[in-house]
Image (cartoon, rainbow, N blue to C red; front, side, top):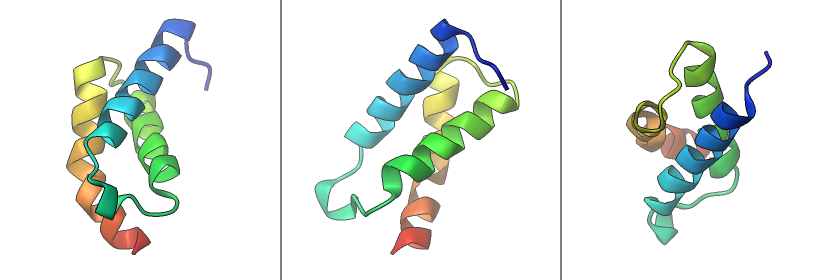
Amino acid sequence: MKHSAELIQTMRDALDAVMASVPADQSVFGLKAAVAECILRAAAHGQTSFDGLVTSASDQLQSIISMLT
């Protein structure tokens, strides 16, 4: 799937925002990649706004952390 440069930047910004909200003690190996995958899935399903991407990833954050620990 090909995304516009603007959407790619929005996805990067969303990833940075979500990762900034993760407490240091919960930042586990592989977390950033898993959150990025979540954001990519949301974009593939039509979510293209910064807030929507952040919300999609944030909603999954605890289950991703649980899966990785």
